[in-house]
Image (cartoon, rainbow, N blue to C red; front, side, top):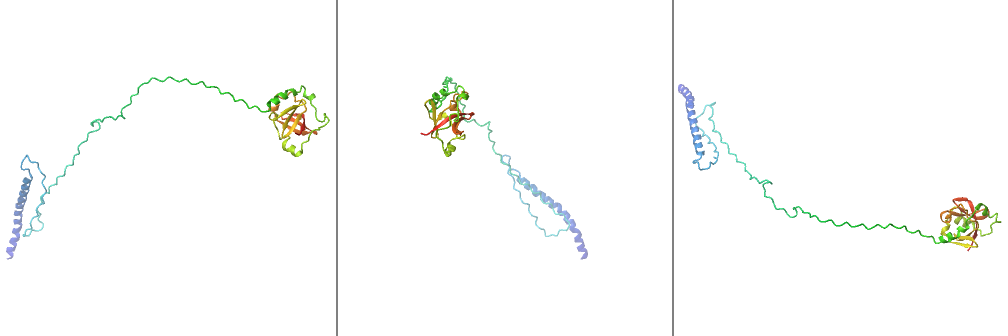
Length: 258
């Protein structure tokens, strides 16, 4: 019995080697048959991509296979056909597109040459006349009174109150004198009323009348009563009129009330 078993073990490898080419031929035939089915039947028909079929699983055999025997190779899987990318229809370029009609706003404006209008002559510009100076209300009175009282030689013609025998007119109270008269209260004689009584000019200032006793110096300006700053001063026992341009010249005056 032992010898029979050893003989069987020696025959099994030979049988397996004989069966391997038979299995390989059987698999090759199945592959060829599948390829023929996938080929188109006629030329007029459009070939359709064959769906890949799953390889059949080999049925298990009851016979025991020796370990270390190489398994039969599986048929290569067919690759799935990739879908072609969709081709978008090309649009005509801007140059190939039909030109649209121009709207009336886009059309170039045609300018017509018109004859130039005759230039208007500019009106002659009238030279602005200087506005007349407002004449003081008492200017004529002064202009007519003072020229006759101009001295020929004032140094010999004028006299102080001491030379006249002393002052005998109205005396201004000290409070009123310091408040309205003196060097700090100057005035222009042209803006005050003037009258001539007995050949002596008499002007009004701050509520009082003043009579001019001396002539005015010949070297003063002719319009001194309107241009020069004057003031009234009490000095040496009497009242005098002084000119700020000629502070050394004292003109004797008499103060009158009413």
